[in-house]
Length: 348
Ligand code: ASP
Image (tube, rainbow, N blue to C red; front, side, top):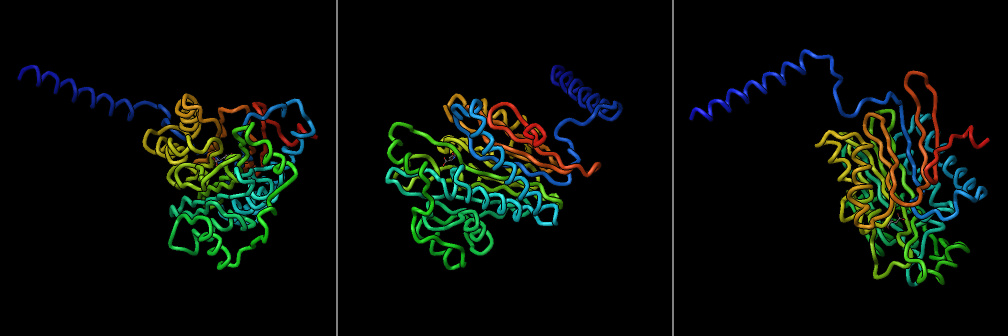
């Protein structure tokens, strides 16, 4: 009895001191802080080994130019008063039309030499989400994902059903699945047995002027995929997630691992429930949870306060950011492929 009351006194004293110290010290609150940004756009164009990219200035210049165009497109939408979903869709439509990336034209091939595309989009304001998987004739899968979100009672549609829905919605379709082929992808058809993976998905996360978060991802999946395989990209919570109370996230990498670790939602949960910053949460998942499982890849994420992060555990990740500072009105931009980040001025 005596023992219990001593413990009780000690516990009350401890609580009292904690209360006092937070009240009477000038300690800054810990956790994420407002980054003072009017809007933020972060993009990725896939993670992977990157081979000789660092020593191949011509090839990296092409990727830097593409990342720059994607960011400029997003900036144009947001600076003209457009919202997050409009910016994310415009950026991803651009990537889907650029053969350098594993989405839309330039997508990676299945074991049968066909193109099966996946995409998803989510808004943090109301947690509304849409996704399509295994579509073969939708020119811009991100638009089909958005249509599912906006104009269907569902979150995810697959294959022929998703295509019928896209057609009904008046989206642009292509007659021939080979529309998505490029000389490079056709070479992979022959080579895919030798190489087991090909990463190059695209993604975009935005914090818009109204403080709303949006995330979108689009991909051709993994090289040589079979049996209608679906990766993380169209799976809400794995490859894509957005919640105005935490972050917007888009992932790229070996999808099976990203699904197992529910990476995109996992990040938001760590942020929300553990009070980690977006950078801490992302790095923990990418380097501590995925690495030992050989789940290579990376992610981009922005929180509701304008802080962003772009970690990866592979050789590199095509990535870029753009934000407008509230106070100065200045727009800042940067991109990276391997470790080094560069600015448009560095490339002049
Ligand atoms: N995550 C994608 C998938 O597994 C592939 C990638 O990001 O390259 O389908």
